[in-house]
Length: 308
Image 1 (tube, rainbow, N blue to C red):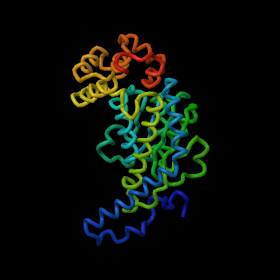
Image 2 (image 1 turned 30 degrees about the horizontal axis):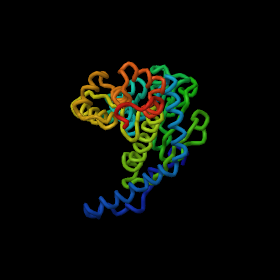
Image 3 (image 1 turned 135 degrees about the horizontal axis):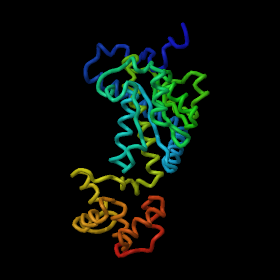
Image 4 (image 1 turned 90 degrees about the vertical axis):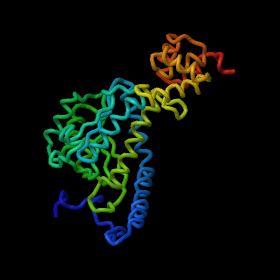
């Protein structure tokens, strides 16, 4: 049996779920819950590697580069999902975190399993997105073997981007030639053999959460544990923005709403102006000097009328 035909770790038989078809609904759910705990434990085991990826991504975004996720099937969908959440959650430019899925956007809704074998398309996607030395390309492949993803990583490395492979099984030895960092949460065999949308998908989502959110925290897009770069683009998010300005600026909701409007919807500008008694232009300049960090901006300015 060739190395390519040998079942990967996630595709092997799971003895703990061998009799799942004879279980009650309650026991099936409890079995899943027990197995899902292994996904969390697997991500904890690679925390140092994930932290390194967080630092790389933050540095890339700070320098005007991008984070590009590349995947096929479930892996690709998870990458696109994470990328699509960064603009509304953190006020990130849509072009700064990009999700690329084999088969294109149509594969988000309809299975395009054959697309994962298209190495030319994987390499071409890197050229199409003009990947360069400022970027971090994070390939997502539960098996560690997906041709589309590996071809993209090889091409990205050739274009001087930093490359990361997130997989739930140890990758082939030769992949190290063009991958700078491996993120390998070893979740073990799936409850349903080969269905990597389960534990592998859960671990993948957890790691992507950590990478993108961790980078945004390092970039100053969070104050305390509040997402202060949220864009008030709908009623729910506007309400959240007003609440943040009220809490951080230490004013009532009406004053917070007025300040948010005057700051053109920028929570950090509104909160800093209120807290330190600055004009909105002064608050913007102070934040820019603090690299967008509200905490640093507050530390760098004298106490204002709402700090008593």
